[in-house]
View 1: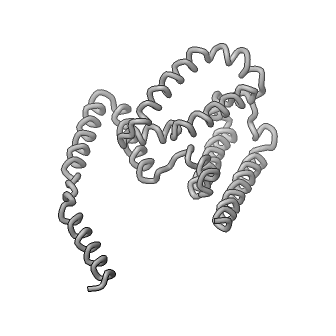
View 2: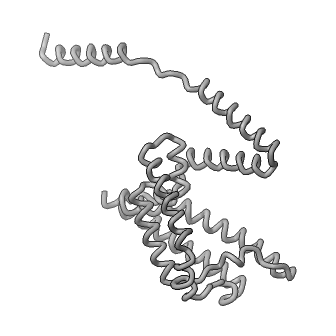
View 3: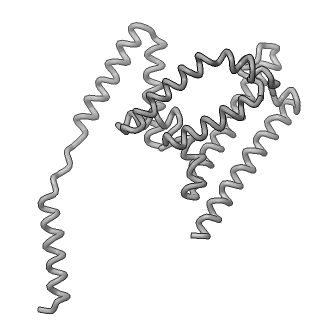
Length: 232
């Protein structure tokens, strides 16, 4: 028997041995059913106490499930183009921005033409140096931590230990930020001016400008991915 044949037989015996010793995977269906029943039971109890609590509970569960299955994460959308060259998630986020821009503009314009208070106007914050500081700190933090708020919560649900630590310090940072918010608002945030695009460009001009900007970013992301793939 030649050496090649002996070598092939040895590899086959080794593979067969690994196959025999490999433990069968344990079915997770019973665990999934048990978790589903617990989720429903908690939802029913919350609904009995308050209908809103029940609604929030089930919406949160559905939203978390969608995040987990889609792997949707703002961190990855901003990080992947630099690290891997992939922009699929980046383009998905931009499409989401475009759809929500159209939806929110329709809601706000509908209230405007009826002479009603425009929803969400109280959340138009001044653009100041605080915006730059906050964006830089948040961007650095979520890349190092490996997840933004939604991504962190989703991965904690999956059992990632490191993200549990991230969530702990996320809470600590939020508490510190809330405690010091008054100082930042008085000395930094209020130094800027609130910017509401329809006041500057009109309703049609504002939505067209925003969609054009998103479109340019989408094309740039697509071109970036093709360029990276060609290089590889």
